[in-house]
Image 1: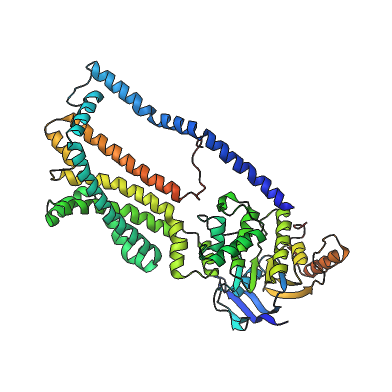
Image 2: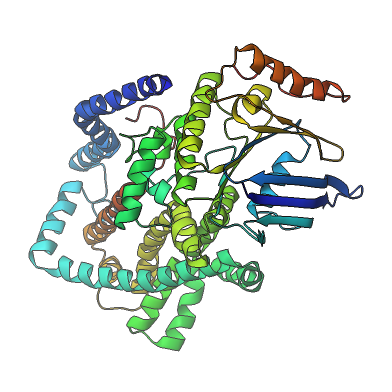
Length: 283
Length: 257
């Protein structure tokens, strides 16, 4: 009977899905090409101008020179060592700061009293720049790992805190009534309703936090360190080895992009249920 | 048959800046086990408020609401509630939405969920997400979710109000089917005259300012009912004339089919 009406509405949807899958590959390829179009043009112009002698090699070495530097730093193992140290610091700082930010966001999100107690003070700390805090951290914790990791953690705390808090506060109140009617326990309200509902915001917080972790890393490593990509850049600068500076910057860009893509991949898998606008021309 | 739900001298007032507004005035109602009650009235007559009180979602009232001999003091799974919108969890598939806080790994739950999906005619959509469902399908998931808890009474707050006429008629039949299979007591709030007469064994007619029960119309027609039959039309007319006695008959007359 009327079931037929609804089914006929649904089947074209399913058909469309499989068709999209077939076209999926070509769309992926064209999307990938589209996103590298600008960098490629820039590189060609840059290399060309350098080859024609229009650029000062100290200020702006040619991409091919930077590439050679990259290869030789990789071959000597130097780059991998610095990157390893940096990644470890960023990871520890992110886990510490992000973890605390998540916990604080959940806590403040749940209780209005806690919000009044903590949020104003936290918002005040949020706007403090890394560079203003760094001298204090060095005074307190010395030049060792602790001050660096804490500086990164400080940066990672706030994006996760703010977004987790926001996510919890924007859970649809109507779903709470459903939870009450189905006799959810307090714990189930948190794990079955509030956490999944605020997951999109938490993921945004994680992505922002990771970005900030790399940002804090450079500041931390430039303030006295003998290892890490930040040190590599700073050290090369004092010897005017501009190509090494560029290699450091490129490594930061690549690792930053890779870590962001990884989180995005996890996010897409966990938020498959979302039905949101993806922009014109997407599949 | 035994009285399952007793509402006695129920009064409810809302505090408003201009003074208290009486939402429900001296409501008396007794519902037998397995009975299908429809409550109809214009907007503002307090019919949804009444349902929320029975559900335990609103405990700020005076008078007595007793279910199975126990006063209602909060929401519980004995009182299934269907909202006007399906209110599904968008991050869960159909079967997980029905299970909600129960685990599908439990074999009893698993079997019941499969049975209920069949009962609400959604077989094949177990793994679909709410965004992939039509409004009518989503509301059927909500009904299955409530039924899984084996409620003694199912409270429905204009559940089909947002659906088109065809889907609505279909879901009315699905609901009658469920009622005849499970013998769950039903309290069904609507503003659609045809729906009230088509489904209810008794139609409770409510009026606003202050919200009160104007009259109760028994519908002694056998199921399945025919909307076109003269006895149906006669009863429909009787209920309608109850509204014409009051000043503002804002009832939705032509919405059904």
